[in-house]
Amino acid sequence: MRRFEVIDTPLAGLKVVRRARLGDRRGYLMRLFCASDLESAGWLKPVAQANMTLTLTKGTVRGMHFQNPPHSEMKLVSCLGGEVWDIAVDLRRESSTYLHWHAERLSPEDDKALLIPEGFAHGFQTLTENCKLLYFHSEYYHPESEGGVNPLDPVLKIEWPLPITEISPRDAARPMLST
Image (cartoon, rainbow, N blue to C red):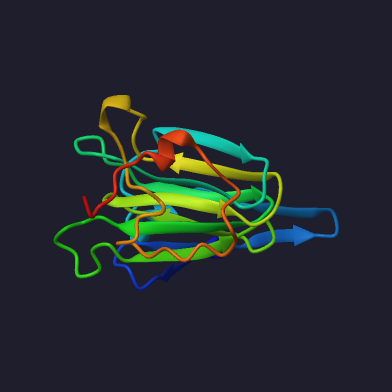
């Protein structure tokens, strides 16, 4: 039985991973991560770190974050509670989709995750209260390699589905690509 269905997006390397539930009247089991099953989707490194976020307020934007080389990372992002508009921006200068973005609605009910390759920025907007996200990272967090772009940058033209209710001062101060 296949535990994952990997779906291409319009941005090369960015994948939607749909998980299969194995269940009966008692409930279900769902595999969250399996390196051998995700190799074909491009996950070739071990999981270095797993993180969880809780965002309390509907309309909050977090992002757009990434790590610079030599500590670039892949992320597998899942929503464990609430619903989010999860977004990835292609920052690979050599890519035909440079500065393009793709978003997916993620919730516990849809059994989807977004597999974000190296060279992409990641962020999200909460569509409900109390959103919990689980991240698997292919690289440890290195503060000196942290990078980000402003989620409101007009060059990106990100279509946030709700009015933005909160954004951290750090994310709001991220540089604009146009400067």
